[in-house]
Image (cartoon, rainbow, N blue to C red; front, top):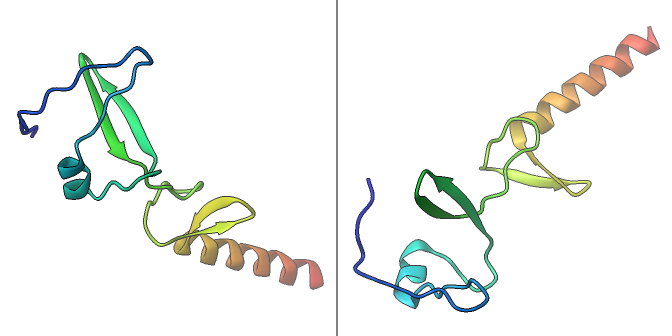
Length: 91
């Protein structure tokens, strides 16, 4: 459910808007944080970007592996797959 903040901002000549500091603090948005932009019919929705696992889309407990985000569960599954493949070739 959307809640009105009563805040109105104008778009500048470069298409930018300023998010008030109170709103950024409340939502945990810091300087240099990335925001995802969604469109829902006539609405523009901004959401703080959380990198997700490239395999399952999970956005929690991720680690970088060769520049890609991989969650713990997928990392474990890859380890099991790789060790199973190595054992199969060794037999």
